[in-house]
Length: 177
Image 1 (cartoon, helix red, strand yellow):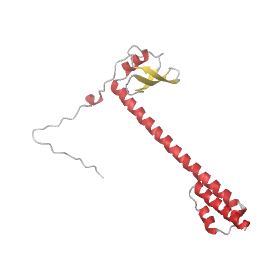
Image 2 (cartoon, helix red, strand yellow; image 1 turned 180 degrees about the vertical axis):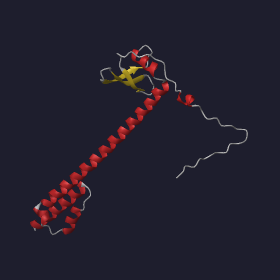
Image 3 (tube, helix red, strand yellow; image 1 turned 135 degrees about the vertical axis):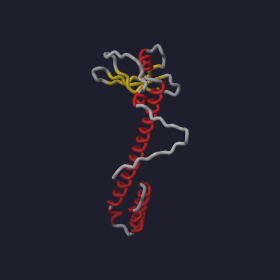
Image 4 (cartoon, helix red, strand yellow; image 1 turned 90 degrees about the vertical axis):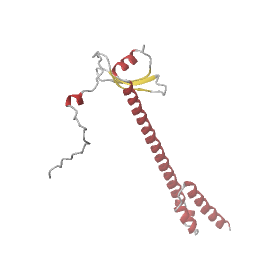
């Protein structure tokens, strides 16, 4: 199967120049010198809305990584000075937006996990209450079959407990006669 070449019509008098490969490969790289004995700065980002405090990860030459927090946005602070030499304001904002998105996704995941755990705990409580009541001799041999069916089909722990207690009360009233 041969690929078709597609062409676009250009209005008369307009010329289209294709960019040269040298122009495409030229990206601005900041000119800074690094001391190989100093830690490398990774992922610097703002930690407050006023952009007066930063955080970053420092990777030491031996490979150990530490998170630096509470870096003041003060030109006299040595770490802030190094950050501004190596990273542009746009890069700091980009990293900040990425951190905000990561944190919001982590919060969503934690909330979903909490909801799932609560639902599972509620289901376990419902099962425990139902099985506790259904194992009682008064409920096993009850003549109030409609209440026993409602106990089995209960959808909340409170509902199951109410029907279980109702069966026990009805059985106790019957025994008292």
